[in-house]
Amino acid sequence: MMKYLQKLGRSLMLPVAVLPAAAILMGIGYWIDHDGWGAGNAVAAFLITAGSSIIDHIPILFAVGVALGMSKTKDGSAALSGLVAFLVATSLLSIDSVAMLQGIDSENVNKAFERIDNAFIGIISGIIASIMYNRFSQVQLPDFLAFFSGKRLVPIMSAVAMLVASAALFFIWPLFYGALVSFGEGISGLGNVGAGLYGFFNRLLIPTGLHHALNAVFWFDTIGIDDIGKFWDGSGIKGVTGMYQAGFFPIMMFGLPAAGLAMYHTAKTKRKKQTASLMLAAGFAAFFTGVTEPLEFAFMFLAPALYVVHAALTGLSLFIAATFQWTAGFGFSAGFVDLFLSSKLPLANQPYMLIVQGLVFAVIYYFLFRFLIVKFDLKTPGRGDDEDYEDQGGETIAPSGNKFSAMAAKIYDGLGGDANVNSIDFCASRLRVEVKDMTVVDQKKIKDTGVPGINVVGPQSIQVIVGTNVQFVADEIEKIRK
Image (cartoon, rainbow, N blue to C red; front, side):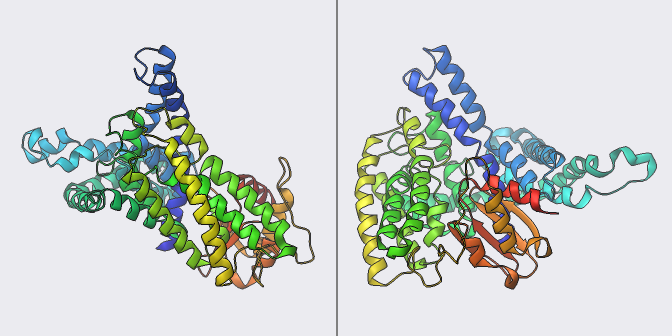
């Protein structure tokens, strides 16, 4: 089950990666005409409308992205089937359709069906479409129906399956929606404390990939909070909307890079150079783009207690930002790019104070991490006996320019090559690999390439944390595989 949920989390990264485009378009548009929202400038209106076209259709993006990511061969017919499934569900469970089925007036329909066009239904549609693709994409029908065989059968079966799912959702969705509303209200009703709790659990769930489910409740329009959507379209409340985003900026832009500096300073002398290379690249990624996995995975499993401290500090940051109502938003993650683009939005409230807060958290992270690492001899990068980045007689391989073939070859060889590797996929920063025999995997050889870390998540499942260039390494591995 955990493996399936991790695959789902990886599949969501494709549609989520589209959101920076909306952030750039809307951010520039609001920057040009932040008072009139485009009413006073044609260029601003064009950019804002283009950006909102992405934000407003997140559920559809999820349906298509999940269907594609969860299908065995990542085929376009799976993506089309995800769209078909979503359209079937949202049409059958629309307010007017439900009113007709129940024989009542539209205004008396359960309010849950007003929110049927949401990220959760998008994800469910994508999952069902992927199941239909994996089951029916190779089915051959009798000759007189041969035109509908194989991949052409998948959208049809997805529509049929979604009919059944919609019948179940007709009864289940109001109950599930009510439970989500209660959960969301339970956290959001706590105000700044709730924001802090959300930040804490968001980081704790990163290793499992389940943080995507938590994010869907608060960031998107699953139960009406829609913190990202309302912040960017200006329909929220200034100083309140954005409270589930703002506190991440001090952590990702300042706190984690400072933690990386502490790990560099506490590394053993002979390993400082290798540790510096890792921390510099990971720290810059966290600051500029908000992608923190390369840095977090560098110590998440080497020093789990330190990671819990990081989660607690993240919760504290969200609590502080929410308390003082300092808000900013992001379309992808809480890095410099999104802070810069969102700072002129109507609902941005004293976003420069997040920089001040970030500088304070940088000091806290640096000295607290340094103290804990030294005091308890935590095996962070550059300190352990079984060191992640130790040179085992070979040369550490770094990706050069536009070529990653050497790195990919050594990683694949360390995984056991064709004889041991069943499948390889990737998400935002990780190679996700299924192997036949974990004992064959040579972790030393893989770590010798300079990757930030390795995460064994099951008897046959292993993740190689590469960083933001993971796609290029994966592409090179695909060329090697027979």
